[in-house]
Picture (cartoon, helix red, strand yellow):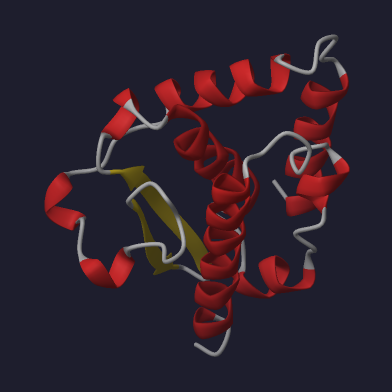
Length: 143
C-alpha cells in the first residue's frame, strides 16, 4: 500500500468518530494491539529523543523498503497514548520506500485532529517520533 492509501484508511477511521474521546480510545486500542519487541533491542541509539515515554524506534531497510519496530519500555502496559501514536505512525510509514516517506507530509496528523487535545509533552514526543522516521528515511534514501 502507498502512504496516501494508508492515510486514506486512517482518515476514514477518524472521520467515523462521533465523540472526540473516540480517537483516544482508538489509540489505546492500537497500543494494546501493537506487537512488543524484545527489550534487548532497547539501545540508546534507538531512543526517540524528546519523548516523555522511553520509546524506541528501530529501522530495518530491506529490498528497498523501510520497516520500523517501535515499543516503549513498559510495552503494551503503558503509556498507552504515546505507544498508540507510535503504532499509528507505523501504520502509515512501515514498509514504504524512503523516498515516498520523504515526499509525504506529516501534516496529515493535524488534518485528522491529533494535534487537538494532546498534552504538550505528548505532542513534542510525537513530533520527535515523526522527525526520527523522516531522518531514517533520509539516511536510507541514499542507499
